[in-house]
Length: 357
Image 1 (cartoon, rainbow, N blue to C red):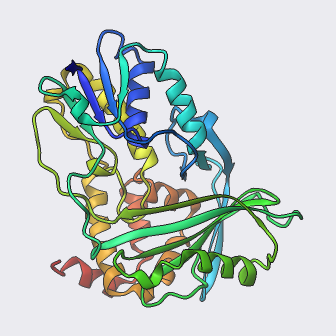
Image 2 (cartoon, rainbow, N blue to C red; image 1 turned 90 degrees about the vertical axis):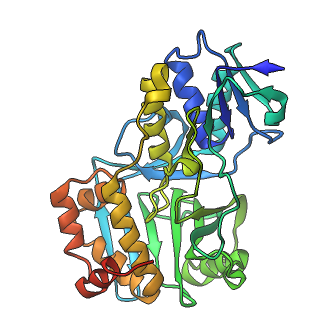
Image 3 (spheres, one colour; image 1 turned 180 degrees about the horizontal axis):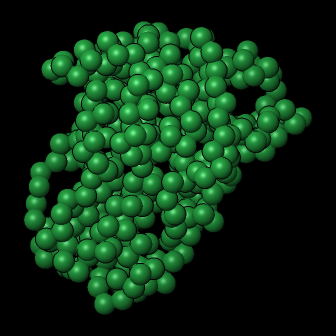
């Protein structure tokens, strides 16, 4: 049976990012890698968006970048501009093609549908698949989006609408998200922060259609692409093994208060590549204990006071654009953290600090 030096379980964003990072830095010239991925083919299935606070390997996969963004709630709205950290959207189809084209040229890299096809006894494993089913009664960020195309130029493609809370909340947190790729093409998403076992929130198609018609005033449109996803707003349980590192969401690379994961995956991949020659002894990588603590407090507030969240987000975005972007992208310093914290309602967050889960 086949044996490999390294095994990546899951050929999605995290697994492919790591394989690419190792390959372009010649770490697989004399080492073998197996990637376990059951899908029959790669095609566009996701849009990964983030503020570009660090350099990454996939600028040529970016569909569009924006320097302006807005947030709306029933009590007000803000428009912000950040020249230093553009908001980028990566097309998963371009991402998959770029990486798989590169990996296919390395004879030391092989793809398999099932891990039972190889012998992993002597392999170091990078795992991106949660070890157990996730608890749907906990908080999740779940969403569905469609890329629409209209006949006339109606979108302002210089600004994204990051959060529009002017919609039905149903005792949870709900907003719409609009990324205008051109003046007549945009991605529109409905997003919920709620327990994932609440089926009454999952009529995504009708939510989006109503928003497009009633809020955006668009009655005729063509759907080019649809995506759907769910991000757990909690870290999965996993067993520690000397020959295994978890990556991606399984490796706690999701920022729990935002769901942002893509750039954390890229930084983790670089960390692994730098330490690959002594990976067994490498320290466990994390996105920052400070942010883990702040996110726990934030999510307690979200769980206890969902009705307050539109105004809390609005207050956050009263800060300078670079400050809030760095805070949401885990790149803020102590002063920037303090500026954000001072915007928050004090009593609500103090109660959350001293509350036991």
